[in-house]
Structure formats: C-alpha cells, structure tokens
Image (cartoon, rainbow, N blue to C red; front, side):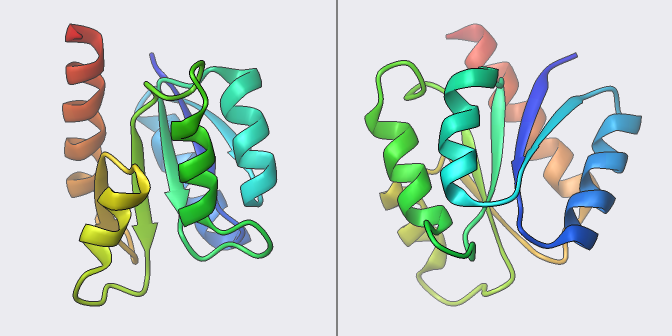
Length: 125
C-alpha cells in the first residue's frame, strides 16, 4: 500500500497514528520536525504527507510551502493536522499549499477518508 510521511513532534501522536495507519496497510515514515519533513519528502517520495502545523523550528506552514515550492515534491498531497482549529485555519492551510485539513485529536475514520480521497485523486492524475 501507499507510503505516508507523518511529520509530528509529539511522540504519543506519532506512535498512535503510525500504528493505526500501519494496521490499515500503509507504510509509514516518520519525521519529528519540519526540517526533517522537508528532507524526507524528497528522500522517501511518499504518496501523501500528514503535516502537524505546530512544529518546533520550521513549522508545518513553512515546511509545506517548501515542499510545494520544489518541483520533485510539489505533487505530493499534504493534509494539515492541527489542534488549534481556529476560524480561518483551513484557509491558511490551503493557502500554504495543503490539499486538505483535519483537526486533532484525530478522528481516524474521517482522516482515512481524506487520505483515500487524495490518494485516489493523485493516482488518477
């Protein structure tokens, strides 16, 4: 199945999401900060990226901008994940280059639907 790059600094969130996605058959690569996420987007060539927006150092907003500004990673769908679901955050995520947006705590069924919709769209492109 598809490789997903999970960019998440919180160990509990990383562990929970990677195990649950792995049980669904996804190959999960993990980055713990924005810099590593940008580097791994290039080296791992994932089918999709789950990007925590509140990362130390290079935050998810800027990491996504860098991924979308680079020709070899521009086409990788990115789903923004944030616990700070404020009015306007979805628009801010889309403006940064994210393809979709979801809130934490993660509703796995809803997130899987979004992942499958984006992977289906990417496969059909």
